[in-house]
Image 1 (cartoon, rainbow, N blue to C red):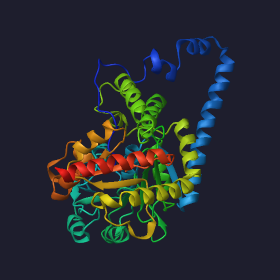
Image 2 (cartoon, rainbow, N blue to C red):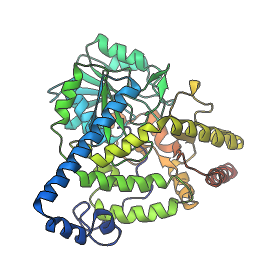
Image 3 (spheres, helix red, strand yellow):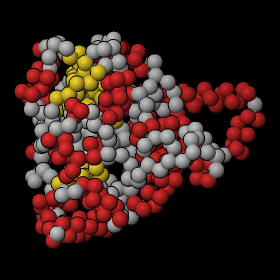
Length: 429
């Protein structure tokens, strides 16, 4: 899916260890110590089996409730849950275009490596169309890239805003018999012309960790009753890995907490420690997500809670972003885009900033307790066809704040103070 910036803390490597198998310190407390394992072993077999049945049934019900509520809220024919956003995309590709081995899938050049991983997991090869510096798609360039060798296309919505021409792009694909998938990883709650993100294409995929935190979690939604059984069959082939989802979710929660200046240093310290123990072989914990994992029951319950309060959270984020933009008026050249996106229909989950040196600003802001995020081209390896002027500009100059809806007035003031100081120092130099 369209990824965020990766975790706030850099990856720290240590000796190889199985994910989540540490039984000492904080990780032992989080995953359950030996005492509780002993209780389970000694518990009578009948009681153990009954509890296991209740746990599995509860998890199934939680996932079913989430799928039904998501479809009802956004007007889909049906929704299917997967373990991660990248798993959702792999499932969607297999459903809309069976047997993709050796085939080509059209994706934007401004995209994270997890999307390319999902395309390859489905057996296909990614081919790219360009994204402009204003994060929109050039319809003519898209049309030219949509040749006869393309079996499916992915259109991504960036930073909470639905692509303005998504309906046109979807119509082009349908004219040529190419199924189109909306990548809504960063657009949960966003709309375009009053229609929710995901309703323009054959299938839409969502990630539940990009603009909030969850224990993993991806959703595949469709307006087609014919496609729904194929999506369900594809998900049935995925595997269960609750430990991975739990570990990932704990680290994402700390990473999410790092968006609040009051807790940024604590979240960074604990996150480094846990990441070193749970995911020693990953560049960062985001890379540990997998394309073949089902959603866990704990992720489904958390996702349902997020969904039920989404409207209130979106309103709060719009107010937060408006306040930050107003207080940064004297540094207006930082704000990107220079004016608010038209219509106010985006999710307002992010505040985008255009800075002289993205990496330098991120480091200096982090030292002051403010978390600025880099775009993925700044820290992920790109394929040769992804190197464009716009993508290079995003890597060098675009940073963003993830807007935590519980930011206090003090935290807002602190964030503005740090950004103003960096702006003054930059202009002075």
